[in-house]
Length: 260
Ligand code: PGA
Image 1: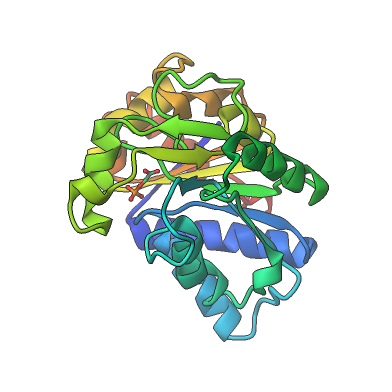
Image 2: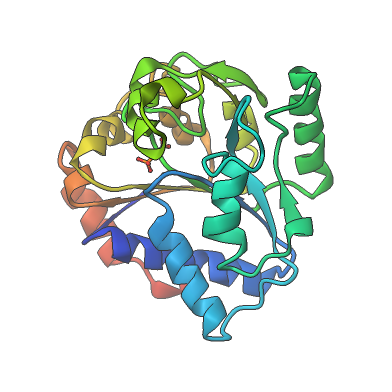
């Protein structure tokens, strides 16, 4: 695992956007796995700036979703499909037809989950998966004690996650209890995992992810099992790390050709 401590969220966004841009330049039809929430927004803003400046051709890029609420109409402004349309597809000028996501309104949800797994495989697998982290250590919507081998399936949100996400809705009662999420086993199949965490509220989960044992209690700790995982954090999110100075020194002396 590589840990990169950046000055602030904007610097983290720029660093990751540069890595995504490098991927798209190398592989124009790459499959980019995106995350929702507040944290990844600086990544999308930095990528959108590159597209607007004519530096990046995203017309062949494929984008896929990490998770989705169950039971929200697809045109609900907070369905993750709608959020990603607004925050990723439109600003990055990715055609709708290049978007992959599970159907949170399917009558047969397990079949929809299995179909999504097949879609990801048929598209060649995820090249770079961007991840946020919940205050409870979740990645995607894999809440604590999710199987580290899990595939795309239905999950029940913890109350803590529902409270964290209530800011996007008109109060807690509106936040769905159920979701579809790529499993931890699914996420681990992506070729490169990049987790971005910013702010003091994430410090405990970040420390457990990087320096704690691999445990389903902290689903993000599964990144320790991946051969190419990068964790980008700002100073407040790095506050509880024991080896922060080592991570800083390692990154500072890294040859620039290596990227992340
Ligand atoms: P946030 O959500 O970026 O809005 O904090 C992260 C997550 O729940 O994965």
